[in-house]
Picture 1 (spheres, rainbow, N blue to C red):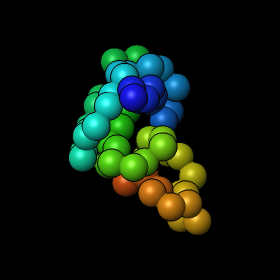
Picture 2: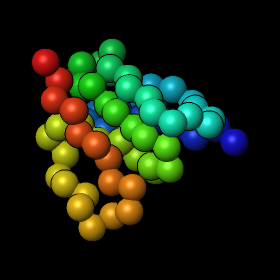
Picture 3: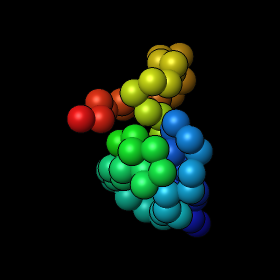
Length: 64
């Protein structure tokens, strides 16, 4: 089953992904570097609020 992989900052559809262990995609619209690990339901940019209370919270990577 494919899931939408969207930018955590501007919500642009970046890809539709199936099974993976780790994915990193730079948004062509806003330039945010999005990083997602397996079993995460969403991705988030550096500016997003921390999701420390959620299981599988995103790992946030600084965009350089």
